[in-house]
Image (cartoon, rainbow, N blue to C red; front, side, top):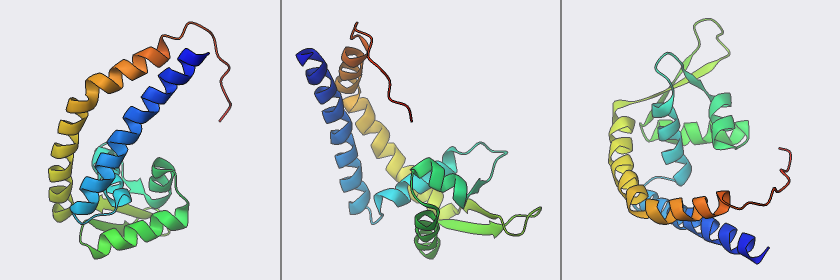
Length: 141
């Protein structure tokens, strides 16, 4: 049991260290961490799919009204553009602007470098957690 605690603590520390780095770097670049997540979500959406505010809220694990406000701030900054759906005019679709794409490119480059640098420690911590032989109950979502 103590090994389980150590394994989970090391894994959580690795994740939290990366998130702390990301928040600090993104903030210093003039964005909110959620704005960076929004830019990633938009760029990571398959080409034949348009992201709606409801999809964004689900992906970022935030309430719909919080996602709408996030889009408002990102649109004011010039990083996101919203459009009405062609089939359903109530639907609001999002797309990345060229300015948003440029901001995202710079941030992603640094974040990927950080993931590569931290990768071995994170992978080791994850492998330790996954190698626990004892079956543990899963908590339902």
